[in-house]
Every structure is written in C-alpha cells, then in structure tokens.
Image 1 (spheres, rainbow, N blue to C red):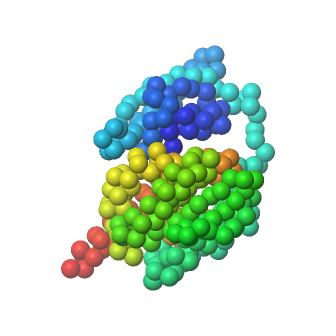
Image 2: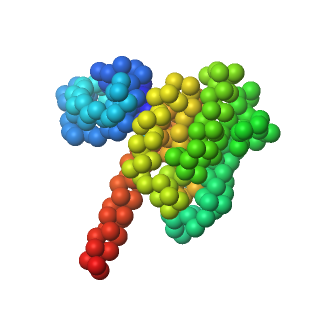
Image 3: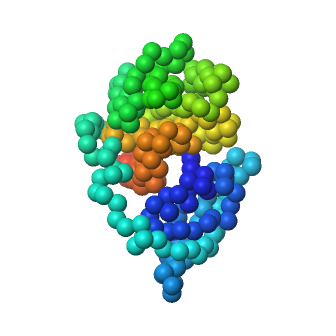
Length: 268
C-alpha cells in the first residue's frame, strides 16, 4: 500500500501541492476526499478521510484538513497517454468471468498478467533461482516474484520465506513480489479472510520490501498493489495508477456478491 509520501506525490501530479500531517512512512489503507474548496490566491483546501494502518496492524481513520497551492496551470497538461501507456497499448484479452474453474486456470492467468506487465516496463525474463516462480531483470535491477493461488495455504508461507531469504541476501536494491488473484473466493478463500491475511502480514513484508499484488480476475492488464510499491520507476508509476482503481473494483465486486445473495434468499 502507498505511504504518505506516495499520496503527496500523486496529489502533486494532479496539480495539488499539499503536505499531509502524517509521518512520511505511514501506510495508507484507503482515502476519501470529503470536501474540496478553491480558495483565493490559487490555493486549494481538502478535507480527507484517511484510513491508515496503525502500530497494531489494523486500519484507523483520521480526518485531515489540508490547504496548499494549486500548480496545475504551472505544470501544464501532460501528453495524452504518457502515464496510461501500459494500460492502453498491447493489452491482453479479458476473461468472460471473474470465476476460475480450476487452479491451473488461475495460475495461468496470474503468470500471464505478471509477465506482460514486467515486459511492458522494459524488464527481460531470466532464469529464476530455486523456489522462485518468475524472475525479471532490467539494467541490473532484479524483480523476484512468487505466485500464490490461495493466500491462506501453507505453501504460501513457504513462498514468502523464499522471498524473505532473498531480501536478507540482496537487500532493497531488488524488488520482491507475492502475486495472487484479486478475488480468491472461487478457489476457496473469502474476500474477508483474504483481507485479514493481508493486514496480518503487510507490516513484516513491507519492511522487507516484499509487495503483495492482486491480478484482476477478468482483466489481466490490471494488477493492484495491496501493500508497498516496487522501487523501479516504471512499475511504481503503473501501480500508483492502479491503486485507486482497486477501491472501485472491490466495491463493485462486493455489491455484485450481495445482490446474488439477496436473490438466493428470495428464491428460498
């Protein structure tokens, strides 16, 4: 998940120069803009509801009122497609359903999406060390990735241990990833259990530069960051773009599931 520094960077790219009154490395779980006002002198005021991960590892919401300058005119308009290039060109075909009919289908979908993203960002696939599912390299920077079908499986713990060992060996000069499907209910893990698992593990993994990422079940061109961003610039920009999309996709998914449950109750 992004930090306070990442949030300020995203707002800056949108032409809003503000400082968030939280520690720079505070992990942000969710953010809502409750009010936006334009003030005299080109200033702007935002009332934000920011859900952070506190020292106990659970979300805590803080109301933050910030006032800063609007630099949108000074920065000018970005060229169309600069930041969305990876999402708009050479896209992979979408699946018809968000449900996986087998573990093999889920794994293939995740690995295809991951490989496509890394190659699009200028990485080259290289031979992976023992215990690592996929390995990519770009100008000396290595991206180690393990695929987890179900976050709650014991095998996922083994995959995490491999990444922890790699971090102890190489440190933060490389990027490390645990990649899974965004919604695992069709293969046995509820969204609630999945999110609880992420909350329990994100502090440890984030300290070791290990990110948790979810591949959209239908659209392999979208991978969402559930914890930290990679440090490689192109990947970081990509995930800064998909992070706010996750909130919308999750809300739609939950609404769809509730609708199905309500229809089932009426039939009973």
